[in-house]
Each structure stands twice: as structure tokens, then as C-alpha cells.
Image 1 (cartoon, helix red, strand yellow):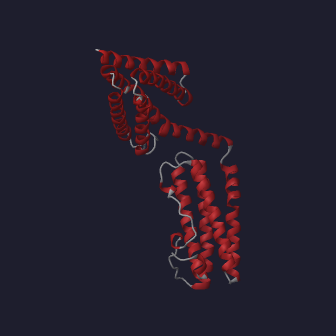
Image 2: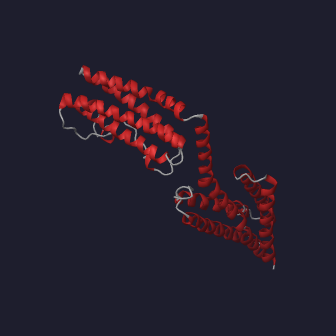
Image 3: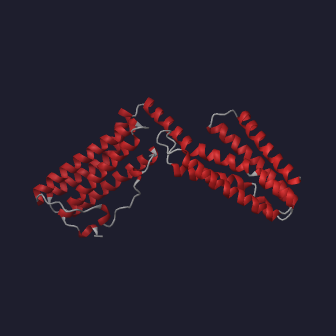
Length: 318
């Protein structure tokens, strides 16, 4: 990597051209990634991409006047000082808030680059253009706000907020809730059957851990393979599978850990208390995010949990 201070004016202009071209493609990628779910925000990024193209054209016209047609390939990763950023524009689906923050950081970095470059330039016309571009990058936030006022009307913004909420529910809350319910309820029977059959806390703990991890793996794969999200909008399969699998395991481990307590009756009482808390949390999540009345959610969850719990005790005591 080269130090920025070691670059010639020709190399600085070539780097600026490369940066503008890359930024325009990033904004275009944002627009394409957001277009289906957030069309108003996508239009804003289309406008910003067009502006980056105009910057690139101005830079290249000046470059040709000063140095001819040959343009050396110099990129951000070739020069020290630029912050390495994850390729957010390649991720699907895009998170609207993350995209806006990412774009703001891009503009801040671009403005600093142009100001630093203008300080090192001895050519008046190059320095003038770099300062002008630095001012333009500083004003991009204002441009985005202006475009937001023109394009993101209150109705459009409310629609996008509702879309973002729905996507969050489909991609995280729904698979997480399904996993938590399965882990909390389905592991009750083997755990308490082992507890009342053996009256041994360590063996019960091992059974609970095996049931929790096994259920997590099974639910994770089942969720990931259920659909690829292309039609349902439920997001990347491996993310949903990971969320579902982890929450399933967590739901089972919660009432398994108390059996690390050596005293059987104390461990059982604590485990039952944890189960009650788990069922209450599941009921609240269904009430908060799934628009299910709390009493109805609690009744459905508690009845299912009690039946599985009773089956475990009955089988273990047989």
C-alpha cells in the first residue's frame, strides 16, 4: 500500500476518479437492493448515484487535460488511510437504517479525502476542483435531506416504516419465536421424564442439554430449508435458520440449567419457576409483535406447556 503523501497529482486524480465510480456503483446497488421494499429511498440513492457520476466526469475531463487518456488503476485499498468497510451493498435484504448510516460515512470520508488532496496539490485548477468536490460531498447530507423531503413524503415514509417492521417480524421475530416456543415446550417432556425417572440431577441435566441442542439443530435446518425467502420476503435462509436454532436451544437450556443444582427438589422447583417465566415471555412476545391478545396468547402457550409438562412427569413416574 502507498501512503497518501507519496501520491503524485496524477495518482490523486486517478484515485478520485476510481472512488467516484465505485461510490456511484455502491449507491446504485443500494437503490437496486431497496427498490422492491423501499421504492422512495431507492429513488434517493439513484439521484445520489447520478451525482457521483457527474463528479467522476468532471474529474476525468480535468485529468485528460492535464495527463492524457491513460488512467492508472488506483483504488482505496491501494492507499493507506481509508477505512475498510464491509460490502453492505452486496447483502440481501438491505437494512434501511444501516444503508443510510453507511452512505453518510461514505460522504464524510469522501469530503475529507478531497480536502486533504487539495492541500497537497500545486496545480490551481486541480486544487479548485478538489475543493469544489469537497464542498459538494459536505453538502450531500443536505441533498439527501432535500431529496428525502421531496420523495419521502410522510405517507411514503410511513409505508416504508411499516415495510421495515414487517420484514423484521418475518426475518427475526417469527423464526425466533417459533424456536423459543419449540425449545421451551418440546424439551419439557424428556427433561422432567428423566428427572422423575432417575431423581438424579446430573443425568437430568445431560438429557436436557441433549434435547435442547438436538432440537436447536433440527429446528435450525428445518427453518433454513423451509423456503429461500425469494417469494415470501422472509429473508436469507441461513439467518432465519440460525435465529430459530439458537432460540430453540436457548428455550430448552433455560429450564435445564437448574439441574446443575445437586439437590433434586430444589433443582426441580427452580426449573418449574424458569418454565413459568419462559411461558410468560413467549406470551408477551406473541402479544407485542404478533398482535395476539395477551390473555389468548397466554392461554394457548400455558395449556400446551402444562400438557407437555404433565406428560413428562407421568411418563417419568411410571
